[in-house]
Length: 344
Length: 284
Image (cartoon, rainbow over all chains, first blue to last red; front, top):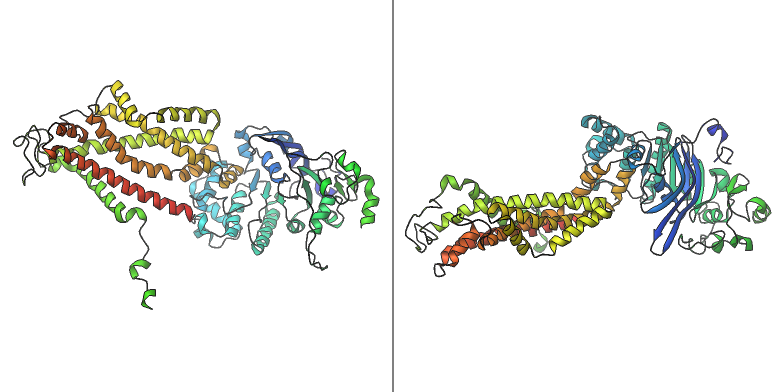
């Protein structure tokens, strides 16, 4: 995507190239009940040091998108392109891809309780991961570095914890270990797939703060996959909202929260509790998410949309400018500004 | 309220299940058999192959289990039998586990046509009753303890291959495997350090129990003349000799009891090991 995307700060991107560039990525799973179109033409860029959030409900294709670009989606048709510093990731041989995973683009997963190897001490598994990318790293040096990293992610008594097994640690500590492991080979992009979903709220805040600190210290670009808009507001520079395998709205955090250009984004924001209003019951978006097995013709959000018009079920809208964001909606974006004004 | 007081012995950390009760007895008994197998030449009461007294003498103070048709001391021969049965069983189990591990891990981890081909091979082998297949293989290779050993390995590996494959397929789906892939671990590293250690439990438990079964199968093959041949003091071969002297029960009973003790010990240990690992799985 070109640099004139609203929300991409031209000061940040001026003369710089995206570190990760995804364009028109499609992932289709073949199931016994027919093709499931999990991702349908996703396009976005990540610039060095930037934090991009991908937001959406379960099943909107956000995790699959990121798994696909690391070559971790099996038994699916993948088309389109995803490049890391210009080299194409889609279709890259596993042996080459392996050197990108972890050392250039690292990923951490949702559930820290099940993401660590239960039969190795955390120090040992961190060492193994480091040695996978730096074969001449000695056992002793790897251990020293592991302790250093555990210290960096604020694990107390790092030297002792190094010899603990995962079951001896709490959920928050395990997620810290996962993060330490992910940054152990100095990647440039960190993909965090719902890093705080499985943790309780106070720990969530600590983990998000830790990720923010690491991002600054290591000049990491981060892709944050989440369904929690509260997390997005504090941690992301830019947001892409996904629905039914597509990005339906994209823009900088501020404008997108202040003036969303897609009914789905509005719906999501309406679900958030606010301090300055008193509501007994929070609004929710009626209906169920569109199934990737049977997408409605036209806009996939139309069946749940309160702005729906007849043209919405005829063809599918593409991203168009809506004030300061890009939005895929006939009604609100493009020529639909009047409707937005009325609603506001 | 004395009922609330917990005896001090209860509070003490309990030994693992495989170091308690029947399993401990089993372990000790296996240990004694192994010790006998290794050291019998140093303290053997009699020569196992030479006549030492009259023929077919009943149990007495001098010859606890009597003598056989050639006047050899039955107890001495039974003890020497451990020197054949135990090394054979150990070799068979280790070889079968090794082959089964390689085949099972390859099938489970690689999947696709490799899995299909290897598992059909396993199916074919397991379609025959083990004793029948072992007999057929030994007969075609020629009778003898070495050929019986080869036959037993060929019969036994598919059990471990199938067990391990099932575990590998299940463990491969776990989330920590994905997260290892995502940070760049190679397939070999993942198989070795992430998948296999988590898949080995059922193989270990079964190998322990099968140890007794292999001892039994060795004796069976020898009994029908396909394994060790007389004069060798192999338990199965000794029972064959005893079978012709029906009223001199001690000749067949002595090796029979030896087999019983070994098989029972293995089952005790295997059962306890399985219980131990089950608990671990639940509280993981």
